[in-house]
Image 1 (spheres, one colour):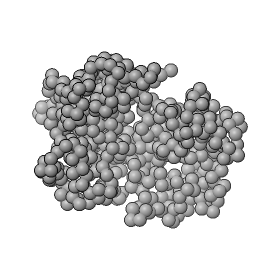
Image 2 (cartoon, chains in turn brown, yellow):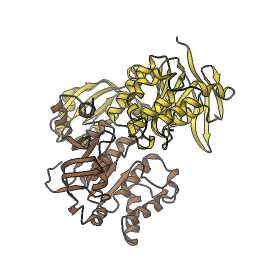
Image 3 (cartoon, chains in turn green, yellow):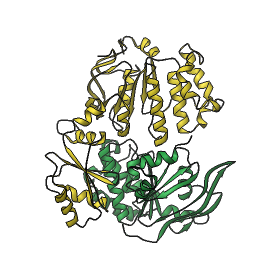
Image 4 (cartoon, chains in turn brown, red):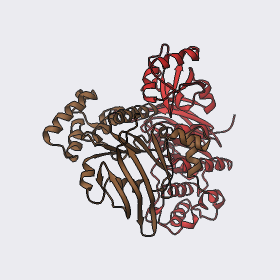
Length: 245
Length: 309
């Protein structure tokens, strides 16, 4: 991937406290345009707290956060218009049709009626879903669902898409196809910010950060981390860093 | 041959027109860790619910510790511990109250079988006055396991105990299971994480209600029908496409920063493959022979004709 210097996420000394509890402890990192950035950490390490802040859903206690060129304190609405979000839980509505789901999400992301119609058509053609247009989501195969869920998360051409454990519980082939969609989005200049518990997926990322107890304890290309810790895979890097006791 | 703990014969379960379990048959020996490995929707939960007597099969027969899941359901319920996918804890009860509750409904108390859960429960005991709803995911998982064990079951059913749990907690959980096995408990566990397969004594690979294969993890791996190269270059995305076009190439799958390239016949010459990739503009080419892992086997079985999918 070509090195581009334009940063889509800039975080400096981000602190988030809940009472006495420090959920995010002076986080500092940048994510470049088109980069696939893996945001890793144990349960309870503070990932969700940080993602909520980056998506404009919660304020930091202190620190500088800039997402897609907008300031988190003063321009949250602009941030929300320029990001996409998808998680395992937050997926498609089973009892709506393919077309209704597209229309629903496009509407939420603020597209106009004309834009929605236009993009829904393009999208269904691209995904070969034309014939499934009026089928309920619960009646289409898992692989289609996943493509569609990802596509609606970027239907408004966001600069960044946040993926929160997008592949949990899916079969190995579907999981790999999903990563092809991620690579494609990245090649089209969309920045991908992804969390996962699959450590082989961590290796698909351009760079990863690993959080432990609210702090980022490592951040680099997967190959560099493996070399630094003298191990053969990211799982072992993760175990070395995140295993307490 | 060891004594049998679970015997399932031709079990079928349908939900309207969807076949959740298509004619499953298998046996689990006493004291083994038996894993059902498969994605969401494979039928794992349906099967566990039938074996723990909370759901009836449409047809077929299932015995747990020699007892029939339909006729002897009351006896089976006393014998088994069940940890459902969504931990069945009472979120507004404290840690200790949850444990006491589960012990009491089985006519036991915490003291009686404390030795069984000590290893696990001691890790969360200092939070015993905290409400379950306020525990982290990893701690909830430990409490739920303690609750499923407190009446000293003969068979323990764990439905996706590690889903959504980080790699460190997953490893610790498996270490607990292996220690538990030494107390003679039969453990039936399901997981979508293929890398956990190697931690079971035997596994069933399950997809769309079918068991594709049952064996020891080593057995499944040694029956993998192809030979594999692990290939690495500076551009994994392009590498996957280019490898698929290599003459004689079978399946091409990404594994981290490498790709596994399968050949049904003998592996081609390494230098030939290397030259091919160089010609297509790849740099930093690395090619090594590699052994398949469970995920390679699972993928191969998924695409093999003859298995419905």
